[in-house]
Length: 306
Image (cartoon, rainbow, N blue to C red; front, top):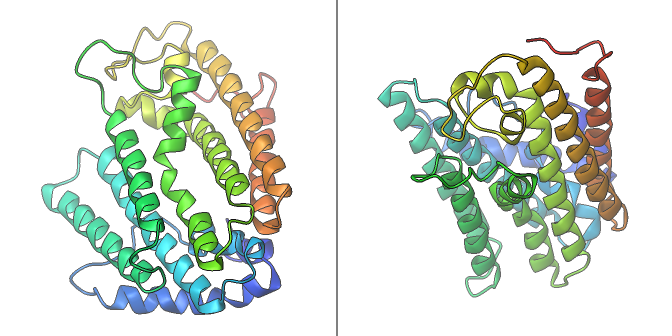
């Protein structure tokens, strides 16, 4: 997303809060320098995670500006901590010190997120139990990314399993609607937004499978696309390469079809709520999905590059 892309999605109120959110981030990161750099190299924070809470802000107008800034800061901290976890999982070639650095960053980011949340959410709020449940879902999904110890099918070997794992892996994305509802003192469209978020991240994971399949294949990371194409075993071993381009093409078409279906459902749900910025974001990603499908069609400009 370009630097001004996020502000173009937001309400006037939301866009006006971006400078305060950025300053809150800078104040937080300065507390840890130089021992710990809370930024993650290679991860641009001009994305929606710069101010994720503002995408849902119009659905909860009773939440004041200070609380919105805190919610956005906490969600950005949690998202960046998640990037650290992803980097640790995906990179097994870095030095021990580099991996330790990522682990330390993740811990510091999580600490800061909790510190911010403690400042706006009462200690006896039900939100804390909800947050624990989301952490447990995320943790289980992360562990599922590793090959099982026996001959059980890998978690993403089926469409149902892959979508379930994608929803659990992104469970912490539901923190923001839960926080907004808690601080507004009203459920509002909470259930609809939570389901929309789940469908969005299911669709995003399928798109990631398509765009990352070559890296996944080289690294031996099973994905729904690679398993559907028969390109890799559940133990991360490549299979016979004969006919692979055709199998990948078929699997890509399938994955993008699933992605479009999930994103369309996310959009329908989002549009039924006042969370207009969220609906705009989902619509933009759905358009990108259709463009990717067209480009990856047999006659498309970006047909099989392997």
